[in-house]
Image (cartoon, rainbow, N blue to C red; front, side, top):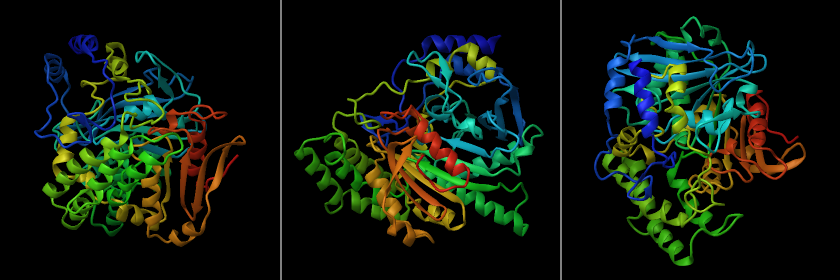
Length: 492
């Protein structure tokens, strides 16, 4: 009763402010806080902590099966709960069985970015079996959910993000990868989910997932190899797929894209010439953004990398967006779409039904501050991505052409620079039209088990958008289905 009452109190006080994947400090997207950001604690949080069951390290806990929330298709299984990766660290998951052929369908893990943002963003705004509505308090079935084709697990990580809770100590992508590996060791060895051990496994992610995806995938491959050598005990994870949407992977190559996109995109210029020139100067001048990122790459020192993040985002990324929404440049800032799901996920009826035991946080600013302090943002994850591609993992990169904050100019520069066994083949390819039921919805390239797609009219969260003649999420689902069928992209 006390837990339910706490959530009820919280739902009354939930903020109606827009929630975004990249935090802002002093009006600057992706800034480095001048002092550690502290998430406000309240009597509600204290009461929740008092009412939580004891953790069970190494096991799943509090699993609720078939809650009836979000997925309402008759006979389709779902489960939500916690994996206790340590006595003081509990990771939240929400699993949905495939609507079709779940007994043979592959398994996909979805991770949103931030760093510090909840994977419930992907579940409710993008690709899950339901979508949050404009009132932020109700949902409706999503006909283009990725769960049509695969079993999907949404994971809130690092600890402290979304419904996860515990000691918030993770501040690098590598540390996050280690916790995620530990979580899946627990999840796969639970009797309810052990049947998925042998399934093909895919990592799908976006945004800061340009760091998370390569780091997680490379860590999984190395752990698998260590298990084979007998150096590590555990369950191998049958990693076959990695996909990254609108991702931050190689900042040194991607940051010039802000300059190009602000001036030249298919929709409209974002800033006037004087602002554009100031951004160019900030990037290219001696000691400027380019030099600071290069210094981070050379040293990997926290202080140098953190300073590079602060300077580059304050003087290049943020000002070159002008007055337009950084996630969808067709609308002035801030764009209220996609709707925030915080009111829905702080409703006591919902949280009680799914077994949530913490206050939902769209973005955890403490976690974000941990990453900002290490400068992880400005690290180069491209070598890890190359490692994963060369290991034979089918890898897909995609981007929405209406997204500024991780725009296609930067992402395509990173893709063009990849040094892999498919690089020469990729370089020889011309872009081809990506059609969805005969309607051009993007352009793409394939090379071996690597593919890239630029999606027309899509913002930062590609599955959340539509294009004339292409329903919301249809292009993303077609792309997803082809990749997870281990096939190259092709128009229909």
